[in-house]
Image 1 (cartoon, rainbow, N blue to C red):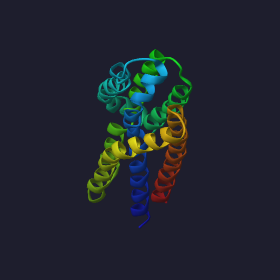
Image 2 (image 1 turned 90 degrees about the horizontal axis):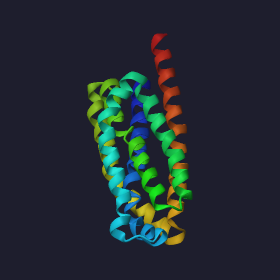
Image 3 (image 1 turned 120 degrees about the vertical axis):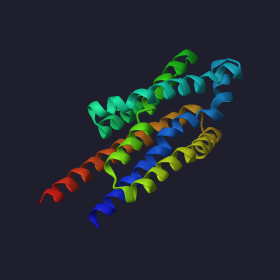
Image 4 (image 1 turned 180 degrees about the horizontal axis):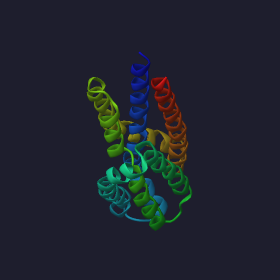
Length: 196
């Protein structure tokens, strides 16, 4: 019973994390016009922020399996999310389009630490009965992030400005770090209780 609750809790945390981390890509889509206006570039050039993120994200996904094998799955996810806290905070203060592109590229590199590692972690640690459901929830979170990320961004921009989207992401990522640390403590307690 205890194990079942732990798996459900971990799945819920992974689900929420998937929405927030993958939201990094989608929150910027409604901001193209705001970037174009703020940085005095054509909208076609402003879309480069999404292109650089997608490129670095895709390429980085290829390496995180090996990295997480060497340094640990949860530790790799935590490092990625910790970097996202710093990067999003910096993006919130950016006033140069070139710096925005550099930070969005870095954001793609570190956002990639989540999805392949989360799926691998689930495959390795969950019993077969729970594994399919957990992977389904994590995959669903990736899809939901496309809708929720864009909606959040549009709502924030309609009341504030695009900088606040990244300040809010900073807070969300910091919350995820706290949740992931809690997840580590739950796993440690679970392992200790199994040894007794």
